[in-house]
Amino acid sequence: MPVQSSLFETAPDPAGASSTPPTDARLVAARLHGLLHELRLLNEEFPVIVEGRHDVDALRRLGLKGAILTLHCGRTVAAFAEQLTRRFPAVILLLDWDRRGRQLHTQLTRQLETDWEEYHYIRQELITLCKSTISAVEELPALLAASARPTEPASPRKTTTGRQPTP
Image (cartoon, rainbow, N blue to C red; front, side, top):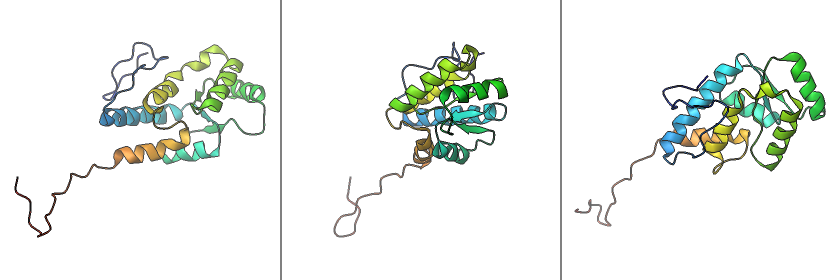
């Protein structure tokens, strides 16, 4: 099923993300907002798996209302994966894209069955859009807040006499 919204082009493969991030800041912000809207909708049905408490807090600030589970909860990755497979038909893995997050993502996906990567494109798209700016889920609210701030037009320069300069 291709990803479609007014903010996204139809993706030919929902498991893959575009390999080239857009350069226009407004387009990046629009794609991020669209992706987070989709994540909010999916989270109503499926839990999101994150690394820690700060990631949970960040996703709550972004409006996710469904289950958000932390990988760092005192169990091994294998035990955590086993619990997930028993409790849920699918999950959304949203681990950070720094070195440790990539390692944990690899370990967890190896433990889970292959069909659990149905929503892998969400993490991949976030990485594509944000990797030059942030590397952790907990940094998303600040990034979105910064992108939402209106850009103030440059105020006209004043001369030392208080008059506007002539063009």
